[in-house]
Length: 51
Image 1 (tube, rainbow, N blue to C red):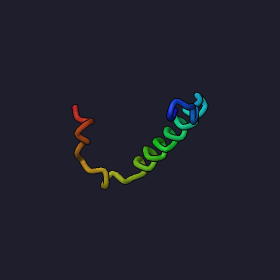
Image 2: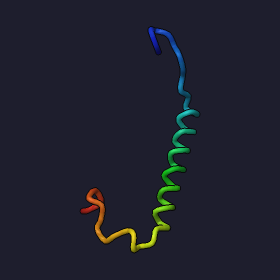
Image 3: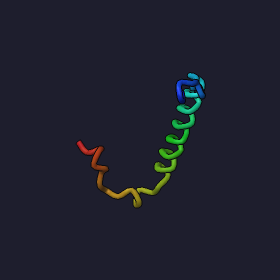
Image 4: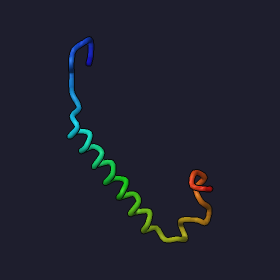
């Protein structure tokens, strides 16, 4: 809304499509990370994953 007038709408389909794209991007990153040789991963855990 702008100045009390409707200027656009977001549908459930819009949100669903966007989520699908985001999940596909995330899957591509995870897949690429799995293909990195262990020598490049290092031996330390990420700080947020410790525990």
